Each structure stands twice: as C-alpha cells, then as structure tokens.
Image 1 (tube, helix red, strand yellow):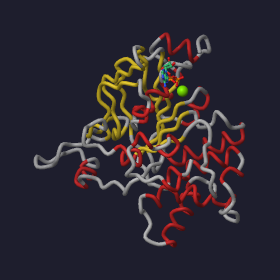
Image 2 (cartoon, rainbow, N blue to C red):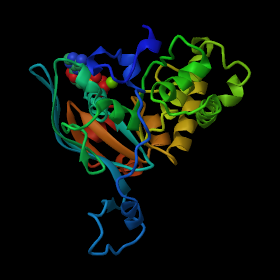
Image 3 (cartoon, protein in one colour):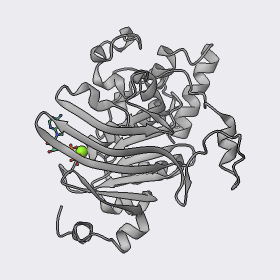
Length: 309
Ligand SMILES: Nc1ncnc2c1ncn2[C@@H]1O[C@H](COP(=O)(O)OP(=O)(O)O)[C@@H](O)[C@H]1O
Ligand SMILES: [Mg+2]
C-alpha cells in the first residue's frame, strides 16, 4: 500500500480500509455556539434554536434509532436504539458475534465498505443523520475516528504516522505547526516521552502497547470529536492494557468514546455507560454501576455472572 498517493478526493471504495479510519478533514465548525450556551442554563429562550438534548447522563452526542443491519440475508442487528453521551466512555459488551463491532462500525459508516452490509434506521451525530445524502463520509470519519483491535501503524516513521492525517488534509500551514500537532498528539496519547528521541524510527519498531498509543495519537491528530475503539487492548499484555485503560480514562475529558470490549472487568474499570448486546439485540443499557451491580434483564445477569459468553 502506498499511503502517500492517497488523497481524500479518491472515491471511498478505492481507499484502503486502513486509511479510512483516520481519513481526515478540516476541523468541524459547530453550527451554533448559542446552542452550546443553551446547555448551561435551564431556561431556553423562545428565540433560541432547538435545544440540544440534555438528560441525566449529560449531553447526547450520538443517537441510533431502530437501527437494523443485515449482511446479505442475515440480520446482525435488530432495532438498536441507543444514546451516546458526551465526554463519557460507553462500553459495548456481550458474547462474541452479538453485533458489537457491527454496531460500532455503523457509527462512522465503516460498514459502507462491506458490500453485503445494509444499514437501516437512523444514526445521528448531534441532530444530523450521518447517513444523509449530503454527508461527506471522509469528513465524517475525521469527526468520528476509529482505533482497531490490532495496532496497525503504517510502514512509516513514528512522526509520519501521526502527521499523515493532518498532512493530507492540510491541517498545518507550516512545518512548525505540523511538528506541534504531532507533538501534542503524542503527548495526549501518553507516548511522547518514550519516543521523543526517535521520531524517525519506524512505527512498527515500537512495542504493542506503544503501537496502539501511536494509533491513538494518529486518530487524535485529526482532532476528532468521537473516538470509536474496537477491543483496543485485546492484542496487548496486561501492563500495556492498563496503560491504554488509563489513557482512555484521560481522553474522555476531551472526547466522547465508544469502546467494544470482551472484558467485563475492563468495561467496569473504564466506562461510565454500558450497553449489553445479545444475539443482535440491545438487551440493556445504563450506567455501568447499575448494569453490573443490578442488571434488569436475566440475559445480562447471566452474562455478567459468567453463565453465558
Ligand atoms: N463482514 C461480514 N460479513 C458477513 N457477516 C458478518 C460480517 N461481519 C460480521 N458478520 C456477522 O454479524 C454478526 C455480528 O458480528 P460482529 O458485529 O462481528 O459481532 P461481535 O463484534 O459482537 O463479535 C455475526 O453473526 C457475524 O458473523
Ligand atoms: Mg467484534
């Protein structure tokens, strides 16, 4: 794969999957700053725009309603309605094959690249349907970045891995600006101190945990609002895992995070909200404390107690 020749103007279908996760665009401009201000007050004046939904879990950034997904004739998700609150970690848990990854991929239209996959229902980012005809999918994936199970740095230097997105989308006007984006992203991903003396070394020369932090730095470099993570620690040893978990905990202050995990302990450690999936259905969702300590549904109870899964 020659990453340097890829540009965001290429048709999506021609972009290698690895490039899609951090395809990036100019930073998103909020449609209304008034709208932000509304959130801080209980009263909404009559000439204000439609208020952003504020619930007990905080501002809702993403929302799926009656989401149905098929692969060919097989239905993988059934009527999934779920809200993703801002600046929290939402964990998606459930037995293997229950549809967690499928659901996660719906949130930034990563399923678009799977020919047999059909998505029905609505997925909103704020109040806009991300499947709307006017949506630029490349821009969307910049706002909603993704980190995969297996760290997948490009066969490039550490510096170039992080600089890649900002470069192809012209985020930096000068070398100094690019340097500072790279440095800040590596710092935010808690990797800078470990690599600052070897930024030109290949990304693949790093340990697994460092590579995953590099991938997180690469996702951050394009200033996303939401970060999707699909079992980001499952290829890592326990020490690297705890580093990534601590990092995720940090990142939620700046980003909204949705994370698939097969580890209930991990969901309990790092998430504030948990959604339990079972055979393509969303069985239960709520605060992580509640779902783990007092699950409503017997299927959730069985899973959490280790009886299924
Ligand atoms: N690319 C695909 N093509 C066909 N079926 C798929 C594809 N990806 C997932 N599936 C099917 O969709 C269902 C949900 O899978 P997945 O979302 O990967 O579950 P999980 O992440 O919870 O293990 C499974 O039955 C799986 O076989
Ligand atoms: Mg999966």
